Length: 102
Image 1: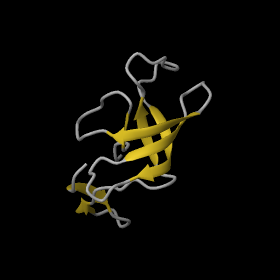
Image 2: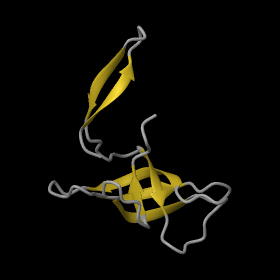
Image 3: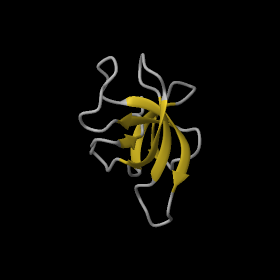
C-alpha cells in the first residue's frame, strides 16, 4: 500500500480528503493471512485474521517477513513463521496483507 488520499468524515460531519501513509508492521498489529495453496481451509475462508508476533525488517526490504499468530474460524489457532507481506494487488499463497480500510 503506497501513500494515497482517502475521503474522511470529520467529527463535525464535514467530509475532507486526507492523506494516508504506508503502514509499517509492528508487534500486535492485525493482518490477513493467506495460507499455502492446497492447504486445508476452515469454514470456507480463503484468508484468516492474524496477529503479528515478530517482525524481521531489513531497512532496505519493502516487503518484510513476520511471524504470525493465525486464527482460522472454527479451528485451533497456530503460529506461522517467516511470512512475507504480499506485494500491492497480489494475494499469493502464504503471504500477509493489511485489511482494507472501511
